[in-house]
Image (tube, rainbow, N blue to C red):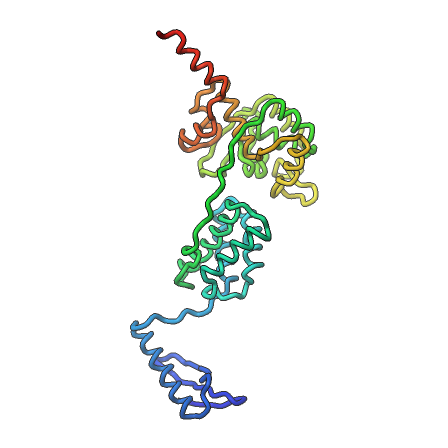
Length: 334
């Protein structure tokens, strides 16, 4: 063994089972005390090597888990671009060099509170951050870097159920008058196809078959490709859309597809006096209109790309007038 003293502090250097170790003998005031500490270090290491006590984990910076997650997300997640934003907020809060093992459940609870108070986020958005953070830790465990996921001990928030509604014809007219020019064709695609916002913003020209008149979506939420017929109204819109990129809808400021249109859509919605309505409710509007016209639920299910009929039935709630018509049928019975 070797005991050295530098700047008033004692250090020990030794080799155990082929492994070299160099430790600070914190608090030692003499060589004799430093030697006792060295023996204690050796004993603990022998216990760990023999499996009597667990080995201590090396400090893994959160930045390491972030990179593993981003590599995973780029390959496996359709919402990779959106995830980059979530990751930035997470890393700004926890800091990149923070040891992952130092992040405790109570630390994450404070993070939840920060998202709620300072960013004024809804429960559903906060839960999204927790899901990504949890995946980062799980990937760290899968890769043998850490052994615990502190997020697993943190409860998700109860999400507020949004009252799903559909757009009336009168509201639609007001909305179109308020929409900026770039947003009008995007909303038209939504109302003529029932496509999800992400599917529309990532729509490429090679997804559109002008000859046979359909849009083929290969990357969908369910992972199942689907074909959607193109209406005459939509066909005219698409043919008049300039082809400036592989993507149909391009942000002129970036030359890339729009990442989000929430701000512009909400502003137009406010000007039109439309309340409690989300872009996703355009999809619900499509389902409602199709059912109102008597289109079979299985056809609606196929157009919207649902994997089970129950989901379609949730979107296509009964129209009051159709309920009245249904009850009227009973008049013919005694």
